Image (cartoon, rainbow, N blue to C red; front, side, top):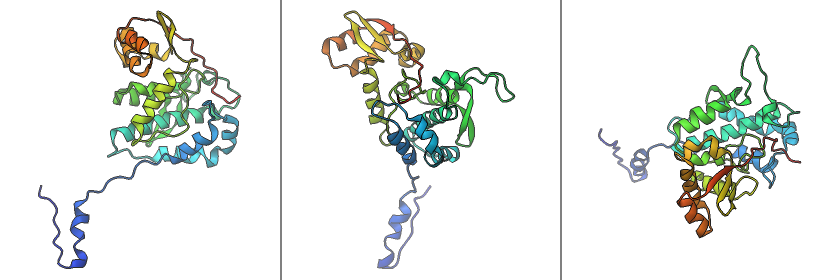
Length: 262
């Protein structure tokens, strides 16, 4: 295809050739509304003020959910799409909790057999429209994010409203900052003693059960998990032992208590 060329005859119009030669690009997806929600209702301990957000949701969270419902991801970069789906997962999880004001764990939301669903898992419930399609949390995490993006660090960013989940970030994920955000999340997650103890004893590490449930995302075996963790550890002796897969790997109990502000 020949390049588009416009000949301009007057000095005033010489810029037109420049304008037509610059391809149009989509504006970045705007997650500012979700950043406002997270910054306002998530505290420094990464816990959520569900009670206040429930009262305010019509003017805070709901407009962002409407943005998710009508979003068009065509022509978006890989990082923009991944950030979008991660935000969608976290926002819809929060919305699911807001709709049930007496739960102390997400697993309390189990409707059982109804005309709409026969699932016993809250993660298989229809939770909201995203990109013009009704979604479940499992679909977003497993059918979209894990299926389409080779990115193990998402396990340190998706938050299922539980105390043993990764810390809920107080800003939305964005395409342009995604790598730095995921690196920061990984550091914060691995260095939280309540979630990971690296090492726990001279010959053992105790890590989140996420590394058990999703081991295949990090590598084929426990040694691969240790090798994945190694770059995020400062102690040179521990780092070297992890690279060699020298530790016995134990898994921490998973606390499903709601990540609510106390």
